[in-house]
Image 1 (cartoon, rainbow, N blue to C red):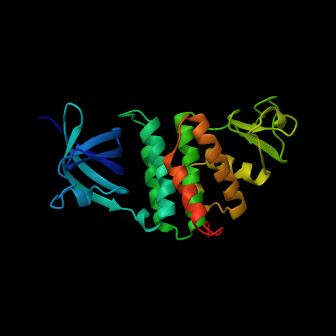
Image 2 (image 1 turned 30 degrees about the vertical axis):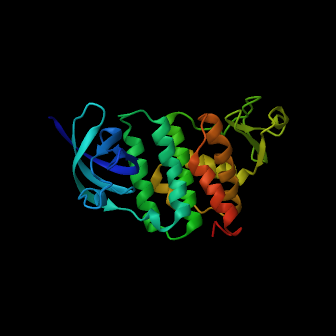
Image 3 (image 1 turned 120 degrees about the horizontal axis):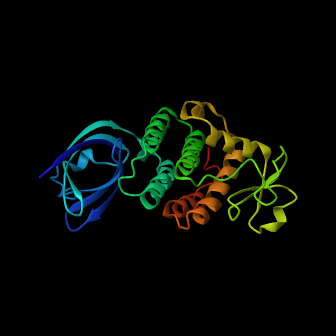
Amino acid sequence: MSFNKTEGIILSKKNFRESDRIFLIYGKNEGKLEVLAKGTRKKTSKLAGSLEPYTLAEVMLAKGRGFDYVMAVKVIKKYSLFQDIFISSWFSLLVEIIEKHVKQKYKEREIFDLLINLLASLDKEANRLRKISLILAAVFQLLKILGFAPELYTCQACRAKLTPQENYFSAVSAGLLCSRCDEKERDAQAISPATIKIMRFFLDNDWKKIPALKINKENLSAIIKVVTLYLPYILEDEFKSLKFIKKIETSQSSNFLL
């Protein structure tokens, strides 16, 4: 039996058979991995406590036919997203994109670095609004890595360079439309120059600059609207996390972003 040691971020877990679990891990060098940890649903499991989501760990894997098997785990760092269900739900959106739209053993180091930088930034940040803005920035950067980033500099209908005025976002067109072309797409939503500038900042800068960006509630709400329109259309998928976030929003007060 061959063994492999990998450093990775544990992103999610799901029950498998009577006593096992399958874990989604994004490895530093191996990329996306789905691995089986036997007996981790049992209360006596020694591995279960070290395999919680949002944990950076060194994992020893044994080669298997269907899945590789977790043999040992050494925790490097645990992150505390579970303290706020709203924040963990937004992070779950990133996990869903990786789970459904990143191929097994897709070795893209940029995704690992993005996740680590995001988790570290979230751990340092106390403000809920700023935490959500960090996750949204990561969503845009992940879309860019995967080749699904929206076009934010030229009108998707007439190809004219956009000017700093109110333009329109269209999921169908995968980007912005100018004021002359907005009627060509029924889903087009008005979007302010300030919101466009923030989305461009998300896509055009490395992570070191992202945490310093200040976003008000109005612009954040506009970006959330763009994401909830764009992702299901461009990835041709329904996202459970978006539905759950909407459910939380409607059950809480209008100040959920504070």
